Image 1 (cartoon, rainbow, N blue to C red):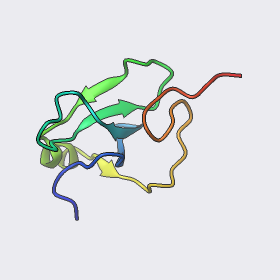
Image 2: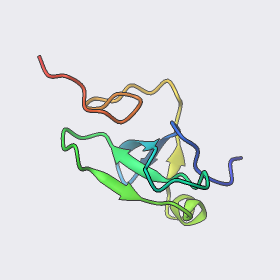
Image 3: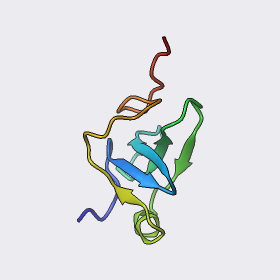
Image 4: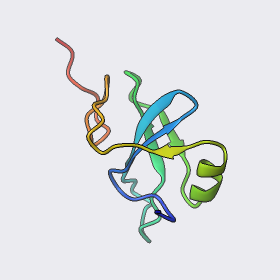
Length: 81
């Protein structure tokens, strides 16, 4: 089992899906900035350094093949038709 977040990891918590994205301040590979699957471009949550807490409250790592509704695998918003 992972002991920390990694870039591109897909996660689930409290009914929401998200992906771990890179941040300008991720200088020591301390990933954990979650971009949640919503149309809001600012739907971010900082879990850096709190992987154990994330999993203890029910956070899960999900299948890398999970398809998001509103975001791409890199956390960018999908284009609307």
